Image (cartoon, rainbow, N blue to C red; front, side):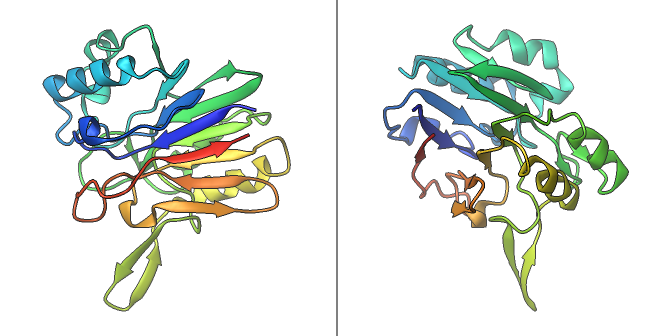
Length: 214
């Protein structure tokens, strides 16, 4: 059973982390703060140095380099790093799919309008996926944001609709970040959901990596 270490939303604080041992290290986006080449180069060097046999990265809305200069960004990735952008790979017998998109939020990277645009991206997720990595959460899972009149579930409704289908299949683990306030683990009888945001709402790196075994 692989031991999976989950991190997200490190926002340039990656070198402060104590990363647990494991078989697979997954970062679900926002490695950087401003998305510059210098920021991502430092992260990529650090990530490649980690001892985990498999290292997977999915970009987030702050990782602007991957949308503005994708060839430059990919050249910074060591061969040790598997980058997933609307793409699947098989690791230790598990099909893993990664995607960076989220509902529009200001003028950041990988933004799409809620509704048809988001639904079209999620339609690309294969029905037999075991591990899903997205930058943002599905609506209703570890996505609550405090508002003056109460909590708001800010996750993607279209992703939640796709999950309702995937949960009838082989999906066992969904890893994401983006909503810093949602850090934590939620389990259903079908799958485990992990918001692995290292930074809190004030961008302080106060959360720890989350480990799960499949």
